Length: 129
Image (cartoon, rainbow, N blue to C red; front, top):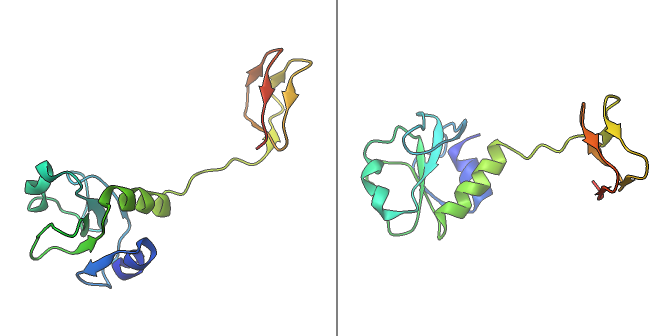
Protein backbone atom coordinates (compact mmCIF):
# COMPACT_ATOMS: atom_id res chain seq x y z
CA UNK A 1 0.00 0.00 0.00
CA UNK A 2 1.35 3.45 -0.79
CA UNK A 3 1.87 6.09 1.85
CA UNK A 4 -0.70 8.28 0.08
CA UNK A 5 -3.34 5.53 0.21
CA UNK A 6 -2.56 4.88 3.86
CA UNK A 7 -2.79 8.58 4.76
CA UNK A 8 -6.18 8.74 3.07
CA UNK A 9 -7.50 5.64 4.86
CA UNK A 10 -6.25 6.91 8.21
CA UNK A 11 -7.49 10.47 7.72
CA UNK A 12 -4.03 12.00 8.12
CA UNK A 13 -2.26 14.90 6.46
CA UNK A 14 0.72 13.56 4.52
CA UNK A 15 4.07 15.33 4.40
CA UNK A 16 6.28 13.25 2.16
CA UNK A 17 6.25 11.05 -0.93
CA UNK A 18 2.75 9.67 -1.57
CA UNK A 19 4.16 6.85 -3.70
CA UNK A 20 6.38 5.35 -0.96
CA UNK A 21 5.45 1.70 -0.45
CA UNK A 22 4.46 0.76 3.11
CA UNK A 23 4.52 -2.94 3.98
CA UNK A 24 3.70 -2.90 7.69
CA UNK A 25 3.99 -1.21 11.06
CA UNK A 26 6.59 -1.46 13.81
CA UNK A 27 8.03 0.35 16.81
CA UNK A 28 10.50 3.17 16.23
CA UNK A 29 13.52 0.99 17.04
CA UNK A 30 12.37 -2.01 15.00
CA UNK A 31 10.87 -0.36 11.91
CA UNK A 32 12.39 -1.12 8.52
CA UNK A 33 12.64 1.34 5.59
CA UNK A 34 9.24 0.12 4.31
CA UNK A 35 7.36 0.28 7.62
CA UNK A 36 5.30 2.89 9.43
CA UNK A 37 5.89 3.87 13.07
CA UNK A 38 4.55 6.54 15.43
CA UNK A 39 5.54 9.08 18.04
CA UNK A 40 3.04 10.03 20.72
CA UNK A 41 5.25 10.60 23.77
CA UNK A 42 7.59 13.63 23.54
CA UNK A 43 10.31 11.85 25.53
CA UNK A 44 11.00 9.69 22.45
CA UNK A 45 11.47 12.62 20.03
CA UNK A 46 15.19 11.95 19.80
CA UNK A 47 14.32 8.68 18.02
CA UNK A 48 12.98 10.67 15.06
CA UNK A 49 16.61 10.99 13.94
CA UNK A 50 17.48 7.31 14.28
CA UNK A 51 14.40 5.35 13.24
CA UNK A 52 14.68 3.62 9.86
CA UNK A 53 10.89 3.82 9.32
CA UNK A 54 9.58 4.97 5.94
CA UNK A 55 7.14 7.32 7.68
CA UNK A 56 6.14 8.41 11.16
CA UNK A 57 2.69 9.19 12.56
CA UNK A 58 3.01 12.39 14.61
CA UNK A 59 0.87 15.14 16.09
CA UNK A 60 0.57 18.60 14.56
CA UNK A 61 3.41 20.06 16.68
CA UNK A 62 6.27 17.67 15.87
CA UNK A 63 8.95 19.01 13.54
CA UNK A 64 11.03 16.46 11.68
CA UNK A 65 12.62 17.90 8.54
CA UNK A 66 13.47 15.39 5.83
CA UNK A 67 11.13 12.73 7.29
CA UNK A 68 7.87 11.49 5.78
CA UNK A 69 5.13 12.32 8.29
CA UNK A 70 1.47 11.49 8.76
CA UNK A 71 0.02 14.29 10.89
CA UNK A 72 -2.98 13.72 13.15
CA UNK A 73 -4.48 14.89 16.44
CA UNK A 74 -4.03 11.44 18.02
CA UNK A 75 -0.96 9.48 16.82
CA UNK A 76 -1.60 6.57 19.18
CA UNK A 77 -5.13 6.01 17.86
CA UNK A 78 -4.04 6.30 14.23
CA UNK A 79 -1.22 3.79 14.86
CA UNK A 80 -3.80 1.36 16.28
CA UNK A 81 -5.89 1.81 13.13
CA UNK A 82 -2.81 1.17 10.98
CA UNK A 83 -2.20 -2.04 12.93
CA UNK A 84 -5.72 -3.19 12.04
CA UNK A 85 -5.10 -2.45 8.36
CA UNK A 86 -1.90 -4.50 8.22
CA UNK A 87 -2.95 -7.14 10.77
CA UNK A 88 -6.73 -7.54 10.55
CA UNK A 89 -8.33 -9.46 13.42
CA UNK A 90 -8.69 -13.17 12.82
CA UNK A 91 -12.22 -14.49 13.20
CA UNK A 92 -12.21 -18.30 13.23
CA UNK A 93 -14.96 -20.07 11.36
CA UNK A 94 -17.94 -21.16 13.42
CA UNK A 95 -17.33 -24.86 14.02
CA UNK A 96 -16.83 -27.44 16.74
CA UNK A 97 -13.70 -29.49 16.18
CA UNK A 98 -14.31 -33.25 16.28
CA UNK A 99 -11.72 -33.71 19.07
CA UNK A 100 -13.43 -31.21 21.39
CA UNK A 101 -15.06 -32.73 24.48
CA UNK A 102 -18.30 -31.02 25.52
CA UNK A 103 -20.11 -32.20 28.65
CA UNK A 104 -23.85 -32.87 28.53
CA UNK A 105 -25.88 -29.82 29.49
CA UNK A 106 -23.39 -27.26 28.19
CA UNK A 107 -25.25 -24.35 26.64
CA UNK A 108 -23.81 -23.24 23.32
CA UNK A 109 -24.83 -19.98 21.65
CA UNK A 110 -25.16 -19.45 17.92
CA UNK A 111 -22.08 -20.03 15.75
CA UNK A 112 -19.52 -21.07 18.38
CA UNK A 113 -15.91 -21.68 17.42
CA UNK A 114 -14.47 -24.49 19.53
CA UNK A 115 -10.97 -25.65 18.62
CA UNK A 116 -9.14 -28.97 18.75
CA UNK A 117 -8.90 -30.80 22.10
CA UNK A 118 -10.91 -28.17 23.97
CA UNK A 119 -12.66 -29.55 27.07
CA UNK A 120 -15.85 -27.82 28.21
CA UNK A 121 -17.19 -28.99 31.57
CA UNK A 122 -20.75 -29.08 32.94
CA UNK A 123 -22.38 -25.79 33.84
CA UNK A 124 -20.60 -23.81 31.15
CA UNK A 125 -22.49 -21.39 28.91
CA UNK A 126 -20.87 -20.09 25.74
CA UNK A 127 -22.39 -17.04 24.07
CA UNK A 128 -23.02 -16.31 20.42
CA UNK A 129 -20.23 -16.10 17.86
